[in-house]
Length: 509
Ligand code: SF4
Ligand code: SF4
Image 1 (cartoon, rainbow, N blue to C red):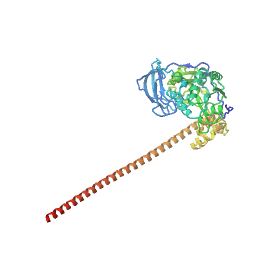
Image 2: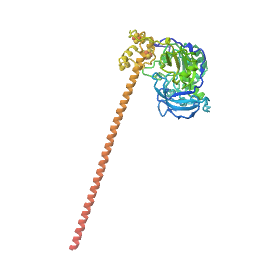
Image 3: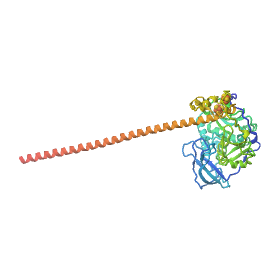
Image 4: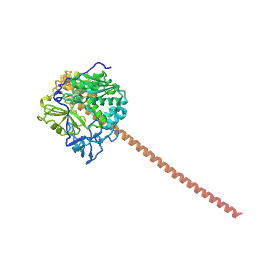
């Protein structure tokens, strides 16, 4: 059924995973306050449907889409009172403000009463997608794209294979590994619902071969189903990228600029599948997630199940606190994660890990000139030429970088990882992508302004033509009235003359 595993590029990054897998997933308690940004997914921010002062129950809807926008709903992670809707610091290197709902928990954790006895596997594909939508589920592997949209578009395309992404290739991160070890049945259950929603013939769980416990647990959970296969894959970063996974498992190459669905595949993270199971079988929207807390500065590295909106500083304290001030705090993995300058920011749906790294864990070597060794080319999983892309991006020639394939760059950082000159290649690519995107946005706005101006001009011309036509009609009407009046006057004069002539004739006779 599947081609032999084929892998291009990638690197063997130092794993550093063992430190957080020594104990089971710990469920953290309820923090006093929860800060829930309205934008924590790809797309538009959700619109609040609650107001300040309102009491809410656990699982109650707090914010949702206001229309057809790409958006994921937000629910109360516990019961309490909405005490503010305003800006909080975003969990982002910029430290900019982001609109958020602040919930003060009441400590009671009172859930919404739900009574639905329908077997989710009897629901239609669109009903499954609707429930995933209502539960606010996004891709939990980092993409944070609303999962329901992927299900709906998958149902419209010919998808033969659902790939469950259990590769978790980023160093340090083990949240998916632990989830597979401990909750494999729930993951397979959610995956079967996704399979039903998109009409895929089979499910393949791709798991890196450095996770033998997870592979065993998933194989056991998949045993009852002949169309669910667990496929160990080589440990190689960035195996977790959808394109690499499809290439490795199916031998199919997603075309440049294309999507997974173009080659009949859809990829969902194992944690997303588990969230689908929780939403449909346990009636629990996405209100928590498993997060890896690791790095040399963490007292007790581990995986914790934490409510969305929990402050990272509160969470770190619950994990035993810090052993020393970290040199760097990262949300996500060290290769693709976001550097945080403060821990007073909340856990969001896409937060797979919080790493508090000590100085020896970070490369701080100064960059030196490119020696054209070609290591970055060999490491690039997308078959790009990073040194050339960087050369163009550095010279502000973003179009040149684009011609070298910038659009296909997945910002995985493999090239920078192997670069002996320590050139911050990914920074150049991020910057160039941002510039191209703002240029596209400018061009789009320019086009919009042009078409609005054209529409305005046409409207003015139409109004003027209508005015002129109305004026002409009025003038024609006045002229017709005038002519009628004159005709009536002439007729009257003619009649008077005739009468006068008749009178004169009668008096003469
Ligand atoms: S790996 Fe670094 S030094 Fe080598 S070619 Fe690429 S950019 Fe240049
Ligand atoms: S960051 Fe981009 S250019 Fe560098 S290895 Fe990854 S995909 Fe290739």
